[in-house]
Every structure is written in C-alpha cells, then in structure tokens.
Length: 158
Length: 371
Image 1: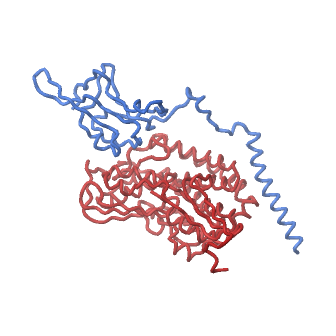
Image 2 (image 1 turned 90 degrees about the vertical axis):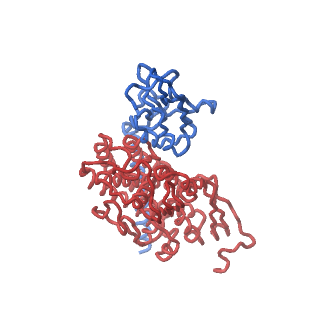
Image 3 (image 1 turned 180 degrees about the horizontal axis):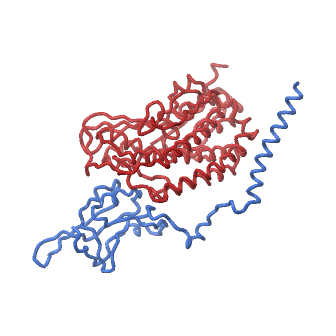
C-alpha cells in the first residue's frame, strides 16, 4: 500500500505543478491580457481622476481675480501647519478698511494631501490639482505663493 | 531539552533579521537564537518606525487626527479612519445617514479585499514565487482606481469624517465596482491554480507555525490569524457596528491553526467581502452623505471606546476627553502588535526556513506595530 500512496503523491504533485505552469503559459501566449503601463512614456495619455489630490492651488479667473477672503479657515483646518495666510488691509474708495490677503503661503513639503483645507474653505477659493510630479532640486521651491501678484478678490464674494 | 529552549548556550548562533530585510516588509528587527537550523528564540525589536502618533493626536482636533491613523496600518487605512470617526460620533451622539453608512461599509470591504490581495502576493513572494505578486496587484490596482476616483487618493484616503464621508460617491462608482466584481470572479481561480494547490507551497505551509486555540486567546491574537485557530473573534459579527448586523455573511473559521489554515481563512474571507459588496452595490440609499455637524467639534467629558475589524484583526480606539477641542489621551489597540507577540511561540522549535512562512501568514504591517 505504501507504493500506491507514494505513486499517488508523486502524481498529485506533478499535476499541481503542471496546473500552475499552464496558467503561466496562458499569459505567455495571451499578450492582450497584459496591463502594464509604461510610465513616464505614457505621460500624454495618462488621465488622472479629477478628484485626485495632488497639491493645493488657488483658481484665478481671466481678470486675475480669486475668491479668497483671507478668513484663515484653511489655516486652522490644516493638521500640519502647511498653510500660512498673511493679511493686509485695503482702503476702499469710501475710506473704509477692508481685510484682504497679501500672501497665501503654501508649504508643499509639509502637505499630506488630506484635503481638509478644501473642505473647510467657505468660498471654494482653493482646490486640489491633479499634478503629482513634485520633485525639485531645491527645497525652497516647494514653498509656494498661491495668489498671483496683483490679484484681487472677486466682486460679490464675502 | 525543554529547559534548554529559550536560553542561550555555547554553540548557539544569534542572527539579526532586519531592520532592513525584504522578508520583514518594513523595519522589523528580529533577533533569532539558533541551534543549528532550529530556532530557540525569536525576539522582535520594535521602534524603528515609531512616530508617536498617539501623542501627536493629542494636539490635533477631532477632525484633524483621523488622517494620522491612515499612516498606521496603511493597507487598511479606510478601516482605521472608520474606527476613529465612529468613536468621535459615539462621543458626539450623532446619527449617521443611511447612505453614509452603506458607503462606509462598501469602502471597508473593498479595502479588505485590496489588503488581502497584497498580503497574498507578498506572502507568495516571501516563499520564493514572484509571479503571484503581479497577479494580485492586477486586481488590487482596480480597487485602487476606484478609491482614487471617489476618495482622491490611492492608499491614504482620509475619506471618513465625523458624521459621514467627505464627498459623495463618484457617478462611475457603481459601474466600476461591478466591473471589478466580474474581473475578480473571472480571475480568482488562478489564485488556487498558482499557489494554493501547489505541492511545494502546501508542504511548506501545512503543520508549520501551529498556534493552538488557547495560545491564540492568551496572546490576544485577533483577526484571520486567530480565526485560523478556531477562535471566533470577528468584530463585525460579535459586536456589529454600522449596518453589519443586517448583512448576510459568514465568519470564516478553520481549526488546524497552522500557516495553511491562516492562509485559507484570508482567501475565503475575500469571497465573503465580495458577498457583502454584492448585497450593497445595487441598494445604496439616496440621501445625505454627511450628517450636519458643528464647525468645531467638542466631545463631552468622558471616555469613549470603539472597535472595528480591520483586515488584520481588531482595532480599538480609546479616547479620553476633558471637554475641549482636542483629545486628552488617545490609545490605539492595534492588531499587528498583538499578532506579533505570538511569533516567538509559533516558531520556537521549528526550522529557520519556516519562520518566514509563519511570519507571512500573520500579515504584519510594521507601522501598525510601532505607531
């Protein structure tokens, strides 16, 4: 009986290996099943979903206007101290003082892309961009100013 | 012979596995005492990736601290966030909309499948088979794409917020998940053909790293590792949270307690997760995806505890609140730490070649152990 079991074991073992090899052979002959993407050669055709969180950006329209009132809600919501808002006071034509942002500092090197700042923003001034290739040669380049020079607050946004 | 085990004698060999070793999946450092090829003692050394997440959470508000838990067990980041969100909601006493609950459970189960798939590929790679890794990643990539489209990130989603989920489901979500289900069903037999049935794999797995039921309980092992020893410990069944008590699924139990039993539990658990997703994907209720909460969350003074079932076992979140905007103390009971503690027990007296097989089936994630 020992001989019978032994032969059975050997047969079962050989069969299990052949089943596995059959699967390997299947992919060897079916090239259409291969789903490799060749990054960075496919950069032109690479489409990321619009919700992908790459970095924080501030949208500006054609008149160089944004929707940021400088309320600092994003600064408070950020767990890492990524955002720093420096405010200034504009004098309106009527002679009233009005708070506005001077510089919106964004430290990309501290950001964990959690999206809490975008969630906290009451005027939807900032959003997450799709860019993800953030490597630079100098660390200083990662500290960004999000509001463009000479940009203004959009009319009607409080 | 019994007295000798656990003591260093003359002629013993002490070797270090890690902290930089491909088979430990991270910076785990094992000091192994060997007598020839037989293991006398395994001593894990921790702390190489300690980031003091618990202490860090004490200075973050209840909305902010959730993101740090994605960095603990990064393979089931969703479920970690879920546990934190549930604890905060328990403290606030808010009701979660039905739609948010279904979305959360769907995402949890997708994460569980993704985690088990990565484990399957990585464990086969530990044993020397490289191809299964790519097969596992093919299905896992589909799940990651779903996550990326709806949550905005692939691994550290930060999708759960106190009160619901951060953003509504993407319009493509249902179609994508259905495509994944068909792909999964078309491909799952390959897992058995390539690895499970393989005679070399079976010989390396069966009877290796045996963890008895009593030992599993006394070491505090949870999750698939304990269910392989016959311990019924599925939090989803025993202490149901969200809508798990209205879902039909089985708790997978094996009784052998060896590495192969733990392997089979995880493979069969993936099918249970598929079952849950199939029940929910066509029945997502309409409504809000987030309950109305205040801008600044303040938990009433007291202690709050909530446990959930992650892909690796039971995760407990314990919050002590003094009534302020930040927690006074947070403690995470992570499954990886307790599961690691039984490694010495199950490998002692075995061969060093089996150490990797036993460790692979425990499914350790090192940042989860250290926090």
